[in-house]
Length: 297
Ligand SMILES: [Zn+2]
Image (cartoon, rainbow, N blue to C red):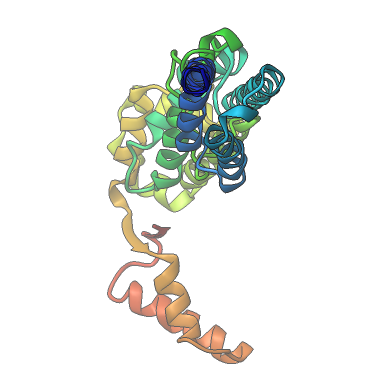
């Protein structure tokens, strides 16, 4: 009888462990994946803590009471819910919603981008790197507005975009507006550069004869309004390029300029003026300085 009882107890314990395992396994494997996704030490600790607690209990199966099991599954469920909320929050921060996506598409198809694209063609006058950077940033912004809680109940990643948190990734909130503002500023700068060039009497005098009637007409709008037309076309761009033929382009970098002036240490006012002047003289040696345009690369 005693042997039978002992046997029965062991059987019972095995069944309890099996039953317990069936209940907790889906949570445990889900939570193991969340650790890989969030890559967050604090989160790892939480998951580990709950897991180590249960290992202890399995070693003493008599402690696996129904009450304990219910409480334990409750903890797992709460932890999973915590992950779901945190993930949805992060996803929301790093993905454009419908509204944000519309703003992005509008900017991509809009006049500002069209005009900037056109102007980058005047490579002798326009330094396009800052614009390329802005555009890359805009194109990198990912859109996903479909994620709901139900989507990540079985598997912890967004099934629509596979978003994986990454600490180097910047939140998207307000970014489209920021990029739009920077693009407007850039267009304004480029516009000034071109208007200044076109209003330079010397350039005009020397090069205007290179232009035909239509080209001169295209420039008239700019001279009259001191600004570029709302929509820049390729005809205007080719006209500006003709006008620039008489210019000598000298490219410098900010680093080279700083090096030439500071030479790695503090500098007096007089020295700074002198070095700046020497540096410029060196750059334009042998050139007609009225034709020279220095361009910061
Ligand atoms: Zn998504």
